[in-house]
Structures are given as structure tokens and as C-alpha cells.
Amino acid sequence: MQNPARIIPFVKRGGLVQITGGSILGAFGDSSRETGVFFLKNGFVHFIASDAHSLSFRPPEILKAVTIAGHIIGKVAALALARENPQSVIDGRRFPANPDVRPEGFNARW
Image 1 (tube, helix red, strand yellow):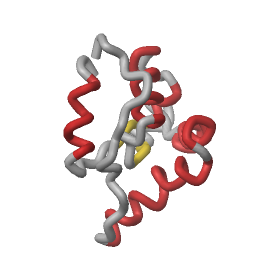
Image 2: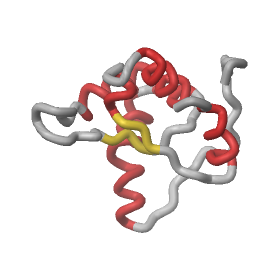
Image 3: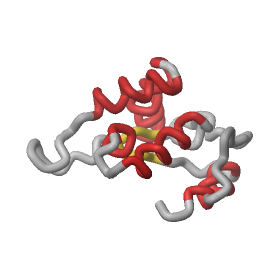
Image 4: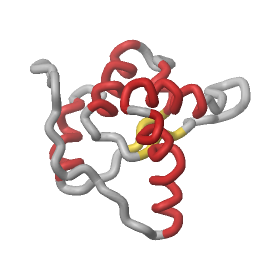
């Protein structure tokens, strides 16, 4: 993402954001990982997805990603991003969309 700051107004207006497990794990490089961690820490993420394409190319490593996210935002919150929030969408239920987002450590280059 060239300009991660563009996500903030979207989230403040109730938009929902999904990141792939690969970004949390660093599969797409340090910049992607750092952005994913920043988004997690600041409540910009509502879903963690596997981005699985096959068992050999981008394999499903959702458990690893949720474990890492758990170290960043806590186990309960990380599990909600992978289980409860997606289930809420499937069931047509609402859940908090973090409208009161206040970024910490926001990098001025963004």
C-alpha cells in the first residue's frame, strides 16, 4: 500500500478492513508487515484472511497469522478477526467498526 493513511477516514466512517495473514507474517516484505502491524495496533483491521491460493503457492497459514496477531493485540481480539467478525458478516449481524480510531506512532511519511 503506497499511502496507508488513506485507510483512516474509511475506517472512521465505519468501513471494514481485511488484511491477509501473509502481510502479518512478512510474506510480502517488511513494509507490508509493518503496515499490517500498525493497522492491527490501531484498530484498523476487522478481518484476517488466509489469501490461500494453493497448498504450495500462498498456502493457508491463517493459524500462524492469528497467533502473531494475538501477540500484537491479544488472543481474544485476534481470534475475533478470524472467526467472530467473519461469522457476523455471514449471519448478517453488526459488530463494532472502530469509528473512534486514533493512530499511535503514525509515521509522517504516510
